[in-house]
Length: 126
Image 1 (spheres, rainbow, N blue to C red):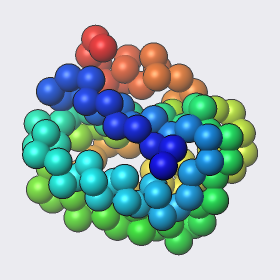
Image 2 (cartoon, one colour):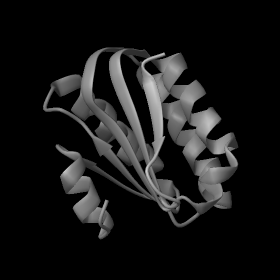
Image 3 (tube, rainbow, N blue to C red):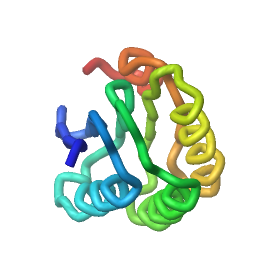
Image 4 (tube, rainbow, N blue to C red):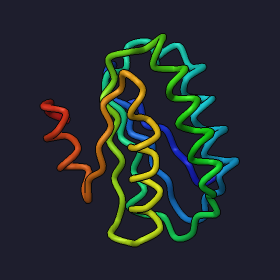
């Protein structure tokens, strides 16, 4: 799997997507993170797509992820979730769809071009 979770601190999770990523892998990775007891303390999540080479992720995968986040946000309501996407059309479109669908959750979501921009939005030091 081309997805790595880095528990940077007690409150910051950096998930890095590299190489080729499928929608099924993305969903499985989200479930794994949420099942980890460390997630109870997380307040900031970076979904870092900046090194992706290829993604086979459909709009239905994004909808399923957003539905999962909606449910997860009821248990963990105070999370800021940043997507970092290199400037390519399909990645920006996926991130925009995710932001739109996750709008009904208590999580704040935003898309950035770099991890540094995401950290600044969080208002923390990494």
